[in-house]
Amino acid sequence: MRGGGARALAFALLRGAAVVFVVVLVSLVLLHLAPGDPMARVADDASVPDGMREQLRAQMGTDRPLPEQVVRWVAYAVRGDLGFSVSAGLPVRDALAHALPYTLLLGGIALVVGFALGIGIALAQVRTAGRRLDRWLAAGALAIWALPEFLIALVLIELFSLRLGWLPTSGVRDLMLDAGAGAGAQLIDRARHVALPALTLALVVAAQVARHQRVALQEAWGEPFVRAARSRGVREGALLLRHAWRAALAPTIALAGLALPTLASGAFVIEYVFAWPGMGRLAFQALADRDPHLALGCVVLTATLVVFGGTFMDIIHARVDPRRARAA
Amino acid sequence: MSAPLRRVQVAAVVLGAVVLAAIIGPWLWHVDPNAVGPLATAAGLPPSAAHPLGTDENARDVLARLLAGARISLAFGLLAASVAAVVGAAVGILAALSRPWVDRAYMSVVDLGLAIPRLLVLIIVTAGFGRLPWGWLAVTMGVTGWFGLARLVRARTRELASGDFSVAAFALGAPTWRVAARHLLPNVTGTITAAAVLAFANAITLEAALSFIGQGVAIPTASWGSLINEGRAQLGVTPWLTVLPAIAIAITVVAAGALADGVERGAPWRSTGGAA
Image 1: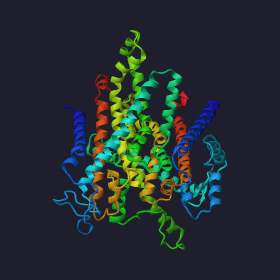
Image 2: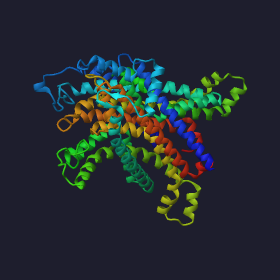
Image 3: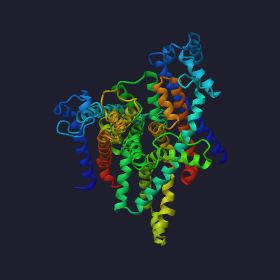
């Protein structure tokens, strides 16, 4: 069993690596097929000396045949070299290293809060099935599901920042805040800035989770083991939390892995709205500045995180769900 | 009449009304959506008789832009959903009827596609090719949006292929393509339609997000997303510029979602099953 688990893990990791490689391959093929010079920004810039132009081109290998480009890119990437970002004026790796923590913070908060909120909504819905609260919650979840993330962000900004003035509209910190202010004040300032983008993303996650969790809960509610527990005299609340919910939790954990791509896309758009200096804003900045290498770096790193995050969730799922653990 | 059926009918009527408005609206309300009016006197006007929904900061008629935007947004969704439906249905049916190893190969591609955020593909395409014309953007979105549909169609086809009527057709010597075309395809159209309607809604939402970021349709072309982007700066002053296209998106997506849900649930094979 242990040995089987290790093998399954090795296989899952290998699979993840293969997916990431395909992402790199497809990206490089697309960039290669695209008309025009990927170095257009440097080529157009009169202040860049000719020697440097050639040097950059050779360094990035954009003048080489495609297979060589792929091999070179991967060979450099495994050593941590993702090329040079002309627009940012620093190695792509450094630009990514600066942006990554912000995206992880935003995504992490959103994932945790979103799941807690979504599960809470689903539990409340099942407790009040058919009554007014259930219908209101269902309508709310539907509205959030139907609206694009950026619209929810705009509504929250309008409400909490512009009307009520409670929270800042964008950025990560108050530039006017005295650098000498205490650590506590700094921390509160950061928390106030992360609140709205994280809430937006959490709501998007929660709507998806609530939909799934409610279906899973209702399915579990009709199972014989719930009826058996009820006939033993277990109270409704305990029935829901201890019996039905336990059975309904596993598919939700599986959903966490599946929700990661949506979460990443959502985070990208929300970072743009809130000027949150994460991977998404970096990627869109790269597009605006015609800096394909930086865009490529953002895409590959995000894909890596999403793919291995999914693998990780899958493993947790197998642990939590005894049926799957036995089957594996 | 059952409540779910009524909901599907309402959804279909609402969606039909939106589509109808997009088709005949610009023809009835004959105002150029891109015509800039006198900025000093006609910019940011609230709704009036001359401009039923007001004007934007460039003194353009909001109703005309909303209708023109509906054409682009709906056509965009339709094109993306069609591409996704055709590719996804073909792959799903083929995979279900192929040898196990071919099936596995198809499904690995599907898993791969589902594991990667679509936005990333669009970012790479934009990074290489620059801003795409909206038609190509829609096709790209279709090409990156068929994976879930293929998985659903495959599951449904496998279920049907082991059903009595398929077994009977195979036993009578019908070739696989004939069983697929005559017996299986008509029975999976419900699944395909439901998934395609959802793909339509997704494409509209994603286009709105891209236009909002400035990587969607090029200005001054109006789409619901680009209208929201244009109106955003004056959200506090002229809220209707943002609110109206937002409502249009929400209505369309909710109606499409309800319709997809109903098509799936109300499909003939469900009524005999009883479950779900």
